[in-house]
Length: 625
Image (tube, rainbow, N blue to C red; front, side, top):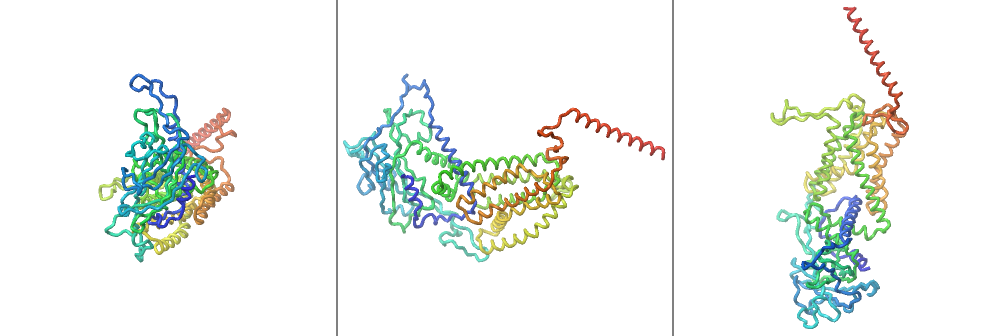
């Protein structure tokens, strides 16, 4: 319940919230990235949870004196009365226990009580305002210090007779958060104007970002309700970072955890001279070990990403908020179904990738395949790589699109013959790279139809490209002319890229055949497209993007129609060098000895006839001579 209240508070309208961040607006279509991010988090939670499944402790574990090491127990028994003290101060190491720093005192709490409180769920809420210190306005820090003590005791060590060290649970947290506010570099290339606020525009004497102090008005304080026995030397991560064992005693203190996971980045507000007061809502509630594991897993995930580097797997604030909003607002059953289907979606992506590589690796004949589409795919992948490098994206995305480009370049070696001309080098030193079409492509009508298809396609494609370029130049903002070219081509490919599938439809129509297509790969991609169509209407997204999900469906249905109307030639060899007539009704290669014998006899007879004809021809030539 406390988490729900915090989530609801995080969604509230906070004036001046993250709009000051100046984050660039992203293109729609991050549905699967959000869901897959959720799956990654679930896997991390599972791995963290597996650490807590303790097996039988080692029988030979000793304490160094020959005796067995005992398990430690929670020093707070179930139902123990306790008091909670909350102090607000600029001191990181708190020592000044005065009334001015005291923000909240909650007496008479019961450890492990899940039924008390105004909402009957063991939670308590404190709302208030604090005066913003001058140092905090100038990028200083403010800390919250939380103490749990036995009922009637004091958290102040100087209170003789009322201070009990072993029953005093203390943890502190910095409430302000330092975040980057990135300055905008874009403007209209024709007018030089921008719609961004002047304070957010990058100038010559400014860096690309500025570190600012931010504040969120919500925080939940969780005290873990768990009495599991732990052995000090066998505590799994990340529990070992939170569990504090009492020296010289077989006891540990309960875990005190500050939960701000549901605080959306868009609800953070900058701290400056315009914020003399700061709103703060604190919620206390107990938490179970399992639930704490889920939150701790997110902290471990951020820690691992931090070790890999900020740009390796960094998620933007918009991606994090999108994931949290999806979890909070989506029906649990629908969310579970989304996760399951997203896993299936990933499996289909892998199978489509595998079959695509296998198809081109084993392909011997190019009859019926559009070679120019392969070259265009290289161009399209190159634009995506340049676009990603020109924009701020994490390292993993850069690696992913670069591998995709290398695969498309590799396909070129399968559709044309690439050679190095060392007799006519560039500048007299560098060998000239040349290529020529393969014979299976030129000797058939495929090349003729491929050129014809791209000629007709250019009549439609170039006017659309020119129109989109003019629209992008007039109405959109860009960093430079180079950035405009990349953004214009990239946006055009996203909008009209499906048109590039039509040359293959034209070749199929002219050849009256679809036997040359990689149907397995296309089927997996089509299934993924249908999954996108379903969830385009389930998950919130722009209407134009929803409509765009159906473009590939139309092309694939045309492929299916062509497969239905064009008959199958049983003698045609596929990319593996086999035909339908080579297999029996059960799909196995024919091994009948009589058939093999008759085929061999016919082959030998044919060879004999050819030999007789050759002999007769030679005799006639000699006679004529």
